[in-house]
Image 1 (cartoon, helix red, strand yellow):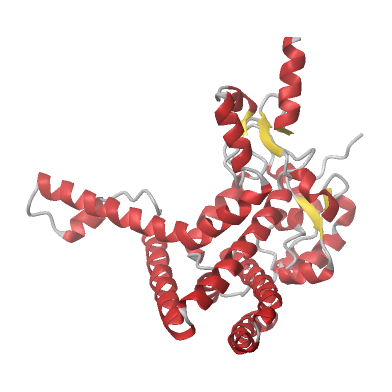
Image 2 (image 1 turned 60 degrees about the vertical axis):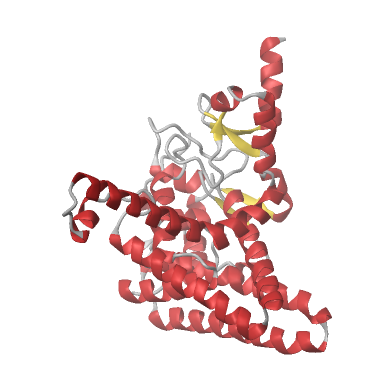
Length: 367
């Protein structure tokens, strides 16, 4: 008989304590090498372009680590102080062109609903089998193509480089339209009244707006300054490559930690948070060097049990509670591509399925 596990069975509290010294060391051993590698890129590429590929690889790895530490800041777990997490998270957000506070608020919804596929459809807005069946054959083909693992490269670049800019532009345009509507109704409407009556569609709070605004100012300003200083071709070429590859890797890492054979994918009714954390997230078995560059995010079920556990405590917490994770899924490097096929949610069976298996079931049902 399967023992019913409670969250209280896990030893979590001792590992939820943030350590400012360890956090500071992680910030320094990430940002300083990242900046030095950029300086090295400028020097060595003047000697030979052959130095560029290994430099880009290093920049990609440190960019991954920057995003991972930004993620910790978003959960207020890297440092003890909420304010320090916000400041450091904002800085890490500049590295990857992502407004950290806005991103973390959206990411928090994923944590609240992990495994509840009726409310949260994963990183790719996946369809249920019923919704997929209603698509035309051509739309079904497009759906599968857009969710192919290789699409993480252009999709990841768009997500980091363009989406925050687009969000800002659309949000400002929405406010301007709202302002004209207010003036049309009452020509004496004050700016303060316009702000108070506006219901933004692209951010939830004033704090999110300022995070998006300042990120865009610093990021776009940085692009212009560095392009003038280092050369447009060199800077944008290297920077685009780094953003593209780091985003693609992190998207795929996130994907396989939630989309896999047997993943907990339940309807809202009867959904259980604890089961979602343990069986709706995986442990991704990575080489130690990749664990370092991804800040141990591979211990994902522990992270979902408590997002307040800083990355530097995840491994120890996982080992302490390993006996309670018997039903947690371990994903190995050789299984990563196999996970890519689970892009449909069968709401009746509460499971993830592939397009191929769905069509096979349909064929059997009508044969």
